[in-house]
Image 1 (cartoon, one colour):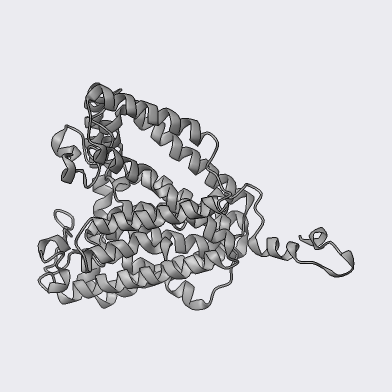
Image 2 (cartoon, rainbow, N blue to C red):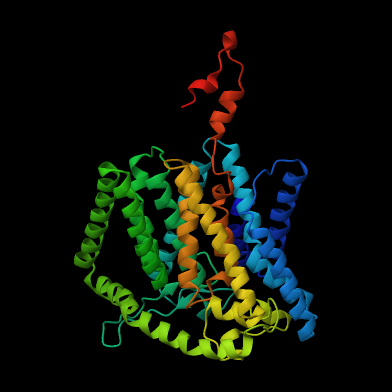
Length: 440
């Protein structure tokens, strides 16, 4: 239940209680759970050693600039810390959960599948009922539940096709969560070494449908790139694994072709939507690059204060980064404007160290649920670093918390003993026979 809090709190906040206290309550439950486990000596995992001195330097750095800038908003400071570091709480909770249950990764896979199916079904229903149906309203406001769905400038358009919010309060949250759930499912299916029923593979089509319904082009781009990385890794594993990937890719091609033939009016608009990625990538890169010089000139050392531009800061006196400064909309711009370029480098180095730990865990636990979970988190973080150049994805804590709730296995020691082997080795055996001698 605790690992589901990031998505549960978003649903509760949208449909039951429109109040940020919902998020705060979830944070207290998650932090309280971790603290309880730590007091009881249940948490035996740790971040990469280099993370801790970097964190210490970062805290000193932001404290100095808070004093220099005269920043006195504790709430803004906590908001920035929540977005930057609270994902670690869910990462530790996820590690504990996976380590305690023989089928922990499978349970997370099943939960991710349920969330994906629910989110996709609601998104499809919203489009089917139309943009003016009450199902598309967010907090009673119709426009909040409608996202743009422009095709190419000279391409096809279609009245009634839009980006829905699904069970979320924003179209961007829908797309980012759909991306991470799909990426996790694919990593587990391909690399966990678990046997699944055929329906688990068939539902890959539901994953793709949900991505398409979300209309999130970034999700499409980074999912395609991640799939290529996984295909390369599968090819190294052997012919059987790679053939399985090709079978899924062929099913995807057949699915797209079927949609194009059966529903040409929808298929043409959808393809037009994702074709704009090719046009937008150079434009976004150039636009953001043009703002880089101004950021370095104004915020090389000190920013406006940790949390000042973070999502939700407007309620406590903060600003929207691309409205208050010459910076573009991106996580990189926001963090630089908050803590300076030097502070952003420290923060980035901390998360890069976690990426390195994920790689080590995947390489040391190939063919296990822990290895697949680590691969997922590595690919997700790499995607977020790329995606964060054009969107402020790290401010979307619903997605960052949910991803961390799935990727905690990277915190295991590099030599990982599966929980079932730990229990097996602890059981007494007849005639003094040491079962560990044949554990392999």
